[in-house]
Image (cartoon, rainbow, N blue to C red; front, side, top):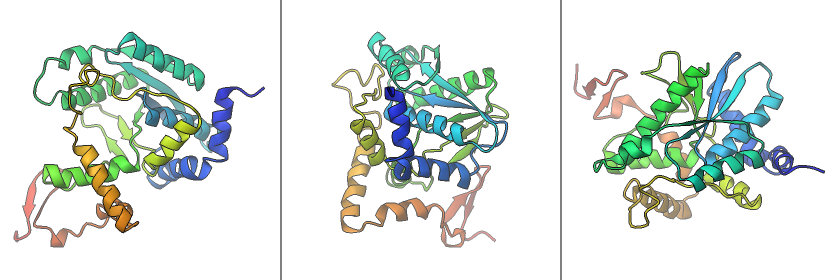
Length: 273
């Protein structure tokens, strides 16, 4: 009799191949995210996106044309016992051999009033890089998807006064020889949700001490939800809106910009000689 994990895997090969596995493989190939000999830390937060990413990596590994290794890495930043148990149960259910390590990040940022979520994210990234390097990995993989990318572009413009995006891969400036990759770059969130719901899966959302308190606002003050709604409204009038937002950071004409920053952060104006 087929196990639940095998059913999930069969689904990724068949009914979800076009919506999930093929976009995953396309990002890996188009952006050169995996090279022969890589040892990749697949970072799992307990949420739907990173759990799907882990299963897609397992599927890719079965078809790989060159050797690479995977470590399924879970950082416990101070989860409640119930949330920690949920992560472990899902890992067993999906047949993902996770490596779990503990940190005290939640405790360290809980009493910080200014930008605790930003600090938490920075600390999480640093701990993941450090642990991955300790385990012999040269890359960490994060589960950001297509919708995260286009929302980030608009949030930067509307709330940050800048044009930037999430890159599909990025060399670490603090951990020599380490690189961050985002192989879910072309996958739509609605397809991740469909995969989750049709398989009856339940995952954590943000499970820190802030969001466990119902009176607390969302991490970004609701900005991302506002941008989601804006994109949805625009898309109802023009179905190409999302694709155009995504492509906007690939089709930048420096000659028509008022100013831009180079790789070293130096600002250049349009009227410079």
